[in-house]
Image (cartoon, rainbow, N blue to C red):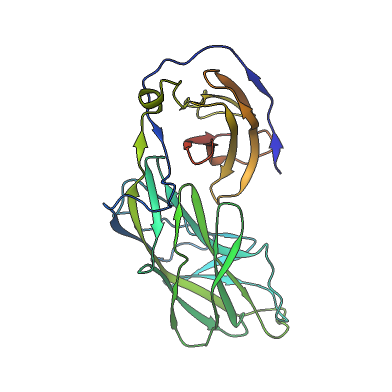
Length: 304
């Protein structure tokens, strides 16, 4: 559930020599883009082990979410993680999916999905398991874009699909939804997803020192304190120019869970906001300050 935290402003001017991060107005990154990939190649394990990390040997500044499930009972079958009991009658249950998320570790970095990038995965169905699988790209606002819908045969099948050309300044997700074209029996079969791989690019966004160029106060965002926290933490920020600003909190799947500040922020004023996560589950969250093309992001760890 989204909620709005209280906001209080002080009159303390900021005089720190910090650097802000500005996303290029054209949407094009710096030319020094490097290639990377994440591979989810499952190795089996005890029944009930629901998550596995991706191979993360490519990019130190990239964040790879664990391949996990939501609303799906997963069991281990050899080298596959298999999902049981998905919908029948051609109806997709939007609350039941498996997938992963990816993003950047710091606001100085930008993850890119380009024309040459793609998503591939291996699927297989046994018994009376769901016979249709759909892969979606989900942006940080929760919008779904269909990448591929495929019939899943009994024999093993590898699917390769294009990804949207976009940048990922915070977090995006890839989700797999499955359903059957006919009613599923009481004891269903199994549909498995394995060898999931995504390729991408990484680059640096342009950086400018706002204070040096304009003589105005710097854009600045403090480290949350305390962090880790339970359930309250405090974040402070200032802006270089008076204008609209938004400070929001996102979960690890890129879903916005709180709005801490939304309105006009005064230049040179230290704004202090509190974040109460009493109604949220333990885990990693991201606080994102947006001042109209300029963003700062901080990582939060909620431990209950």
